[in-house]
Image (cartoon, rainbow, N blue to C red; front, side, top):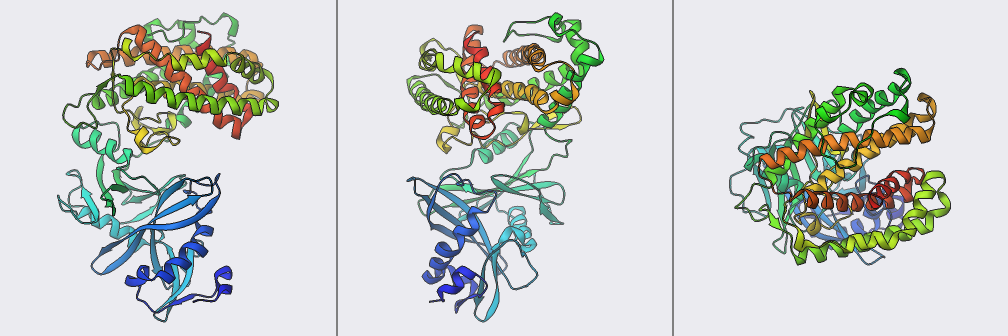
Length: 543
């Protein structure tokens, strides 16, 4: 056995008399690697999602070779077990390098294999590995029945490797840019099923030819020892863009709020409208257009059209059962209520424990939330599916301004992985398309309030109360125009959202669900922003 001292110091290499190709067959290596080295490495990684839990031990669930022409790397599926009695799986590709100067910040373990000294590193740091992954997809056969399956879309013909680089800061995955034209996303957290991002991307792009999402070009999947298909990587076209819609919206909204003073607008005399009214551009009063600008409303209209087109594509399938529309039923209703009541109770506990951190309007609204907890709970329980005539479809599931790219006054929708807190099975449940619309409405609400929080004290003359009042007026026109455009588009394409009353009921239900979901995050990380979801909840329970 290697000396214990070297385990903690990690400066003396471990010695193994096996070749690199056989290294993972060595129980001694696996034991040292998993127990003494990998824990320290994993918890420091940006993509590691277990930071709020206590790590118990790591097991090697599966390993496989990623290879070509005698060049071999290993893909590891690591099972991270937590003290709290649950586990997560992660994908880590590894390489052995002997160059002293290489990957100095991303070494996992110093090691000597057959008298060759070097380091085990995360293979994505190695250009040779990145090139190999690209070439395996580019040369994939139509039917791959091996353990590691490479797939190539018909849109990805005759491509050769030129260059690769990291895409930049990312949280849960690692994305690589190839030839400045394509993006290969390696999923780090692995689920025992096809990743929804892969499924949705391939379906929208290959089967429905939906133009406003990056084209699906290929993928890497693993068939594990239980014959389950795990998605490891997803290759898509790269959309050159001017940033995401969140950043774009913040810039636009800053202009809107600056106009209050610049155009000498009296907030108290701004004409208002009902929440969730379907509006067209012609319905928006001239004073509002003068204040916010026509261009903002035109962009909202375009985004509503693109969202509708995405749902029309997702709702127009009659062969592939994973994508065929479904009606509401008792099973869905039970699933939804259980999920909602669990989440609601969790947020209620959070608010009761954090009340002392709130002040001003946030405190007033938090008290209202607690006072009205029974009626909010009742809203979640009163989901009566028997009255609903609309259809459920596969949806984006985590739809907000940050998941949309802006390019030449148009919008491209990305990242179909689904809600981070949900299980993989829950992410694939067919839901009302209005749930995505609700996600975007909450995102609009956030963008409006974030503009005030980020600039209010330094850039705008009006006090916070007046700015909040203007915010709610603006929010009603933005969402009203979005809803009007979206409903017209979907109705014209015969996507069944149900009758008007049903649409409003589902939209409000989903908005309440989203705002309650957000509340947990804000209370834990930035209580001064808790006013945003609380205001969203207040809008719905008092409407």
